[in-house]
Amino acid sequence: MTNSYAIGTSAIATAQKALDLIGQNVANATTPGYHRVDPQLVSRTTGPNVTGVDIGSVTRYSLPAVRTAVLTGNGDQGRYTALLDTNRQIETALATGQGGVGDKLESFFNQVEELTARPDSLASRRTILTAATDLSNQLNATAGDIDRLRSDLGRKIGATVDQVNTLATRIASLNTQILTKENRGLTANDLRDQRDVAIDDLSKLIDVKIVEVPNGQINVISGDSAVVVGEFANRFTVSQNANDDIVITDTSAAATRTFRSGSLAGDVQSFNTDIPALRARLDTLAGQLIQKVNQVQATGLGSTPITSLSGTNQASSVTAPLNAAGLPFSVQAGTLTVSVTNNNVSPATRTNTAVAINPATQSLTDIATALSAVPGLTATVNATSNTLDIQAQAGFSFDFAGRDTLPAGPGAVANTDTSGLLVALGVNGLFVGSSAASIRVSPTISADPTLLAAGRTGEVGDGTNLERLGAVRDVQAVATRTLTQDFADIAATLGSSINSFDDLQTTQTSALRELATQEQATVGVDTNEELLKLLAFQRMIQGASKYLSVVNTSMDALFNII
Image (cartoon, rainbow, N blue to C red):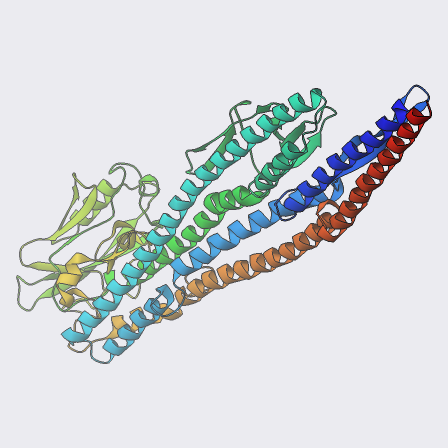
């Protein structure tokens, strides 16, 4: 009879425990990361006799293969999303539409073409300078916006690495709690759920591979680097190297780590590779604009005779050869033709002097010496700024237009600077600077529009130099592309990347949705199914209660007989 009571009471107690588990399932049906549990009933025995029923174990449902695929998919989606977000921000900064760099380029050349018809119009000259200022300002703004975006991204990367460290520490702590609890014979399914959520969050930041060890702990690996090993979490730090690239270091191994996927991998790629590459293209565009325009301006004539010029580009050394002097633009071996007009005699005389330029052997000081040898000129090196100053002697003026000599003429020179020296030294250019961030309209020309070189002959109404300037629009400047074509190619390349990452993200989102559906079919809670189980265990309690009632009745009958 003792066994009879034990059988009944164990059935009621076991059913009650099962009902508690079912209630837990139903209560957490919508809890992220929750894995449904199911009691596994076993017979309770004493020797050869069955003395009741018990919960032998609690099954926590999981689908390891799908979980591995989900973690991989999270990493890929995190990388695509990060790259897509950054590229969209770059597209906004690049301002490819109206008012952007491409639009300002077209506006500048349109104004040049309009002035060609009336080269002596001071108002039209000011319009060109305004268009040039708008273009340089837009390049400055675009470069500044992209640089700020990169700076913000650097801070975001630092915050993401902090998140990685926090999640790794949490996973290691949960490993410890799970081991402690399960070593005491208790279930730790709630802790396992929390650990799964933390690993899921981590997989969105970095690529994650998990290895479960027999004691119930999980090791987390990213690439070839251990992130969590049992109860210990590695720590990562962020720094920047000499090239201004982001470097992530595993402090436990004092080694640099590269993550293959996750938002961190995407952001590091944008910071170290994509944004610098785009900025380099923008600087190349600005540099070519400066060189092409300044070459035309420097070898043309304004309305005012030139008596002095100062270079704006600084040499790192005034005695080093030009090709090693840190100039922003390269100098080629060639010839610089200087036209000097002597107004001290009547009629005035003009001579063209060819100065040989060899950047492999000549320094800035050597150039000053060579120009000082030209009759009527004095050239010096500014010791403060390491730039070139050219001064006409009293009664003389000079230019680099290669005009006919006087009085004999003709003696015109078509290409007066085959070396590119004037552009490299920043002499008489429309623009100063060398990059998208530093380009400006020359303050000297901006203050005196008559210095804008409209012609090359000095005759009234001569607009031949403006024609040369307008032709820059159609000159191949970057590879086989014109300036406007190159900016359009930058925008098109960026647009193609955005479309590609958008497609990849959409595809990955769909794949993750399918994986989630598969996983939930196994580990998720079906409330209808749980209600059926609830009814079954309620009936178990009812049956056990009736069983005990029968046992009690039988016992009473036996006692009455006795």
